[in-house]
Length: 401
Ligand SMILES: *Cc1c(COP(=O)(O)O)cnc(C)c1O
Image 1 (cartoon, protein in one colour):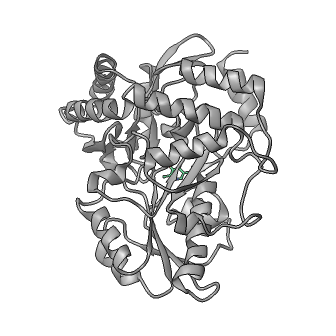
Image 2: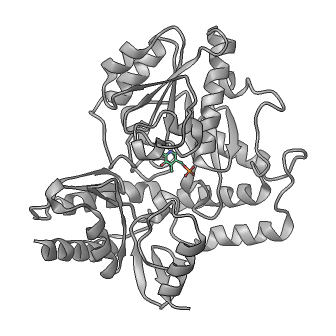
């Protein structure tokens, strides 16, 4: 089969809920991937920041194979010998008291919503079914019905209603609007420290800190969705650290397993997640020993390979370098750590064609919304490789002049 055959098959049998670049990848190692014809590419997306450790990190794959030979799934009807240790390690790493594991990011967000609502009824005294959660314009928190109920992106919502009530939208980056939207029934404020899907949007300095203070003052939980920004992607272990904010509920996923297994988690103090009673929430595959063993190793690798530090250092270097790009198409270059976006002017004709041209040059990245090219290489990338990528990017922009 050649590349075309795979594309034809996928488009024939698979639902068209994505619009992928026409590259068919068969192998990955570190920051590199290879297509079915043996052509090599630099991965500048990292599976939307799920493969922060680089593809098939040997230590993580070893841990996966070792555990796969022993035990993969018990369900939570029984206990296993991996989850208790991971739970402790996750709480110690993040400074929280309790953790609840799920599989996907959207499920973890749903879990955070359930936890916040439960807290509102049991601790804050909100009348049953009256709890409100405030979310932000241009948010991205996943694709389930409840989560798209508070999306402001028409294409995420059209034809999928009716929606879950109980959500209020305020403009992102506007703490006064947040304060004005709070009422006695407000349970929580849900926010991405930086909005990655919206086009690498970084809020005004001081926003997260101010929002956290407003939440504290009003007895409202501050929920940070760090599924994409967390675990080093934005140059800190968690992006909220830029403003010294410790969320009441922290949601993580994506690179938790180094991209080797689907797992997500919600963390909080005892007084929030401690409210769940048996039977009230769960998932068959949650906390399965295979996932847990993989995450335990991925977290060790993250620390021992100093990936967070590397993200900060290389991200700063690359952002400065990208800012030297001269092109009439570029509106702005922005980012934190190795989460970087180039916003194009509307006249540039969209980011997609730039991504397609970069693919031809051996660099894989993806547009986010119409006009932003997202750069998010694995956090193990080095300066020499970034210089190589820069040359390709500069070349594609030169060609577009
Ligand atoms: C990817 C993402 C999600 C959803 O995660 P899934 O695993 O795709 O369900 C939620 N929030 C943010 C910020 C994300 O980037």
